[in-house]
Image (cartoon, rainbow, N blue to C red; front, side, top):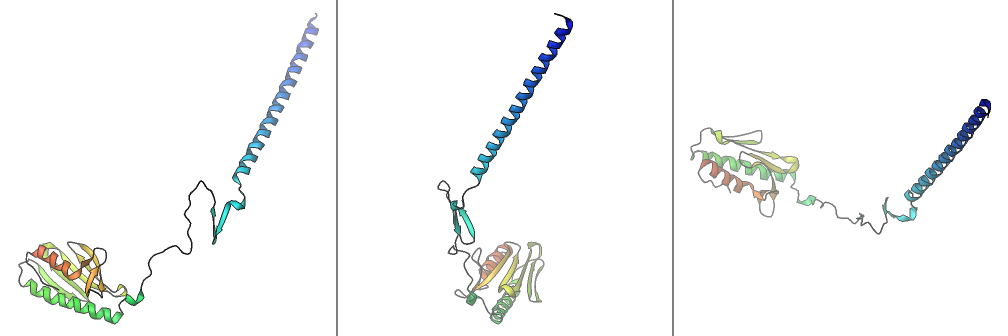
Amino acid sequence: MSFVNRTAMATASRFLLLRRLSRSLKLSQTLVHSNSSRVSSNLIHKTIEPLDSFWPIGESHIRHDSSITTRSFSSQSQGPASIDNSSVLQEDEFHRLANFTIHDLLEKIEEYGDNVEIDGFDIDYGNEVLTLKLGSLGTYVLNKQTPNRQIWMSSPVSGPSRFDWDQDANVWIYRRTEAKLHKLLEEELENLCGEPIQLS
């Protein structure tokens, strides 16, 4: 066989091989594209659910699925307890009670100061604020909070407190701890100054 014939056969073989490779590549791409479309279609089909699987409740929709326990909320759900406005003190009544309480404390604590030996002891009332200084032991501040109908107290022992008027017990009480204003002051002043005091 001549050199020319061998070269022609080799070229033909290469050409045939290239055609087969080309067909294989095209077929692979077709299969990949087909499989991808099928997977995407299945995903979309599984993701989109009929509207019947949702229950309408009010303005919202809750999914119905027997395998999931859901908690529904309706207009009958219990919310925060409503405020009884009739139990709120009228402003003039609040001022009467608060002013009497603060002035009564002023007189009794002034008298108490004469019986204890505390360096820096001083009590003052001005601009509706009662200030009791106990030197290095700390300072008490009491004042009215008219919008809230409360007496606020800052204590060097118990910190800040907000007292509401309890009409049933006729005392100022801190709802968070149930502490009564006069009783709390009696206990703290006795512990700080070493002498008992009667405020209530």
